[in-house]
Length: 633
Image (cartoon, rainbow, N blue to C red; front, side, top):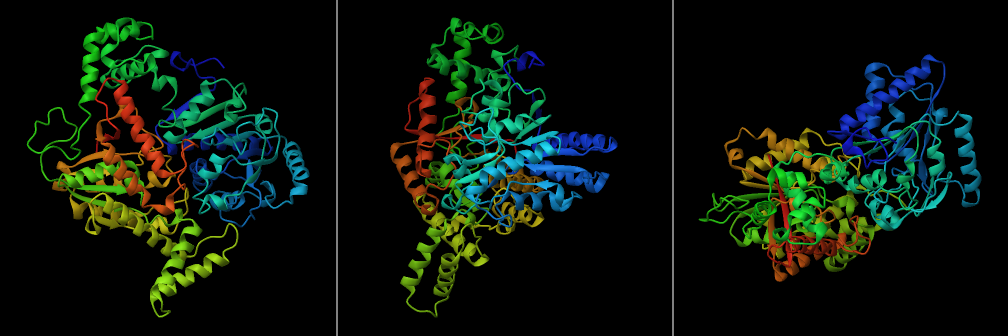
């Protein structure tokens, strides 16, 4: 592929970047609609290869809209889905057949006979023949005209896990450990995730006449950059799409963040050296040559493609001092502002003091994982802290944790007349009778939510925050939804807005702004953002600042940080103890590093890594650092 511009010279697959996922999905939907109408006019069917997961949901919504509002017909469309879990019946809510019916097929005029999804219940001895029949059906339909793809964090397309070859065909595969961890919450625990799936092969996918891979959110940014700019290899199956004559990636801005043209633009073309880009470049250079910022020399800049930076902003000595001071000014032990101090170069203003601080946590534990040390610091320094848990978190409690809690309640109570015993007994019976891959009843979900409330309170006690500092909003959208299939409504936004008006915060801490828009964190972030906007005319809002924290799996680079809160070894140990109170979540969250098996390990590693990064740049050495970005609320 010939790059379309100088800045894209490292990209081996064309990448279209949109401001958000909805705009990107609308563009792909228009392209598919045009293809269908063109084929209809020719009297020919259109064969679509379809994907599941959260990524294509927005595309399917757009196609449904075109069907309802613009008369787009699917009567001559034939579809082939990429994959299906082996062992799941088509009626199971996490089966891909059920997903497609709910998200797409039930809302359009696609004839059921034209729908093809791999059979997840075919006996193991018949899987090979079933897969060959699936390939034969694709060929009999004339081949796939337009293949839709998502991408997993391992770089898998369909369920073609690392190690899949370019000539692989439809087959049974063993799911990668990271893939199963990513699906754990959908199945109420990793133990319930099927170990096998049937998937089209890479070779099958490459035979499609046109391929579009979509990706949203910063969690996909790294693997997108590797697939687009790296050498194609079976270890990253999406990279094997390189060389296809009609493939392109369609992504939102956050999923494109790791492409060289955004992350290191000075390596691929001329740069407008604004302060943020300058800081990004100097931090990158110091990390690359392994020198503190103040020891960088003119030749270091010149040898790494930044001679023009010295011309515009140099010499190196003065440039180094400016960037060093910017980094130094992000560090503060007073995340709520230091009363009576000169705050000219501090991240947070000194007045008012004490501040009313409102921390939004999508689920119980997100707050402690992302900013547990800072929570304790804010409490120690006298601020009025309120932690708001937006959802109950009951979907993330494994059955075995609920059974253990139910047994404990029953053993302690001692009388069947106690309502708590009745609830615990009902939960225990339902969980023991629950079939493989079964769903929780409302009663079980309520019980699991109580488990997470108890854990959240215990964790906050370790942060010197009592029950009076806590709000459990239990937003309705979560109680009626499933992971990656949430549908927030006005009632959810209104509940958040009421809390804002009640607390009238001087500081808001929130997370999820760069996540996949279908993720729980992103849904909660959008509700917080909308609710804040609805309150902007209120007097308190004029004096409110927003700060963003993030998951330990994706720590910020020092160049991206606006406030860095150091933690002493004792403070880090206390944070780990607070995280440990969320016992039901041990090993439940998706991990960036397979060597880190527990949530506290993720958080400790992330906070220590941020501190080491600051130290390597020549700043003060700390045991750990929690980091934040300003939210221009």
